[in-house]
Image 1: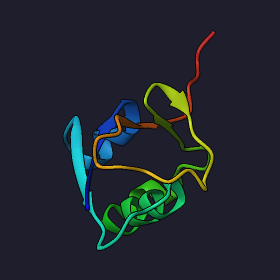
Image 2: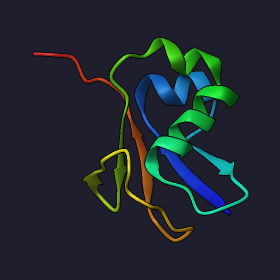
Image 3: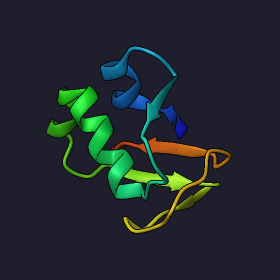
Image 4: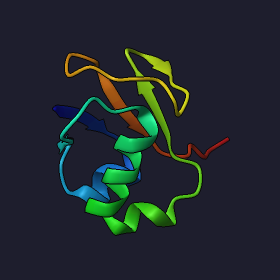
Length: 80
């Protein structure tokens, strides 16, 4: 299955584009997709508080994904 991931902030800078794809041989949960992203882009491992949003809501690690889900990798936000 192919999952399209929208990237923002530092994650976009690391990957070098706004959207990337992760291909996994079977249905996957959020944790599996995040692990694959960190394998494909090792610099993502340096970011301690990455979150994933699925269909505009923060997702738990065990949420099962479909290819039609809107998935976003959310980096930590700073500012004041």
